[in-house]
Length: 469
Image (cartoon, rainbow, N blue to C red; front, top):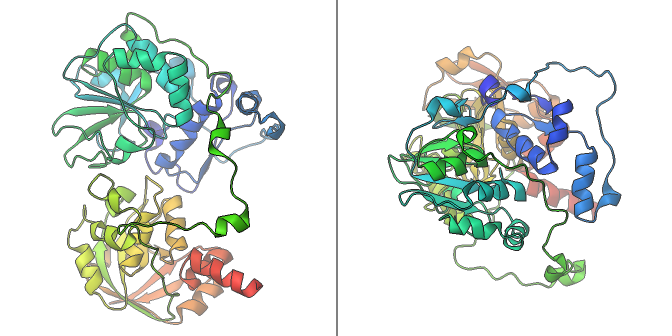
């Protein structure tokens, strides 16, 4: 789908998968595809609830929660696409976008330094088990780093119990703790000038933790086959075929070890111990009725949340310190942004092209710029998740009524708005006075408008609670 439609192909759309091919997809397989819908820019991705989802719930003693949810008979869609799975070949996204998709056979033979399996794009046991079976009895070359990041403790324990973790270790794999880790550059950063194959959702420049990285996105089968060969390898060329595996009948982790959640009254008595690098979220003020905002940045299309706020071991240690992490905001675009933002009095704005905020959903890409007093983002279009995150932190997302105004606007122009609160509530277009009148559309729901006016979701919830009391 990314090869056909690119990273903006799903913007403003809900993608539903249906057809006989779903019979071969487990709940976790569907999780992978739905997870990658964000890379298409989709609002959301829908699969039917059928016998495969029932099997998944039965395996975790939740069969009573299952109900069949399928599309209505003879329903129609605004757009339809067809994928013949019998003709589908292994695919790979080349550096440095999930949308740069080609067949593995087209880039086969290129040397690799690293093959990495894990992150949210590998949620289930099977993705690791199939890699274990591919490398079983073999060993990766000494100059290849074969990295395994189990996605959960449950998955890790399942691999221990069934012996497949041992097969990975014997093949030379490096086993890392469960979690995101290498996907967000918190470890396993690749060497400069060397190719890294990863099964992660995105490969934007520098996200791996290496500024000049060369990251390819692929399946666990391609990653394992390439690790053994020391070069990008189509797994269909292996002498032994990739095994067909199914998820374990039951999860192995005993949830009783973790205990039940505390009762509400008891939970309120718990004291949170915070180190000096853990700071409370700043208080954000409500949206003013009048704004005069200098444009501090003018950006192009497909600005990712990794460009708004980088990942990596240099930045993410400050994840619980919004005041400090703001120092890194937009540094991939303009290293002077944070300093200029702090110097701007009364807030500022930024201007962007299409699909602003693509990629990772991390809310820090909204919270950190808001702490630097970003009040308005004016773009041709937004990625859905980031647009909502802007609303949640009281940043007003606006789109051009006339996209020609994007070409005329320049960095350091000043945008002025009057009677902003009244105009927002009226649902009318907003006129921003600059060197000419720039018309902008917000397209916000009534609830989103209330959240924006309150200065963000936390303020709005606090107000609602006080009103109810």
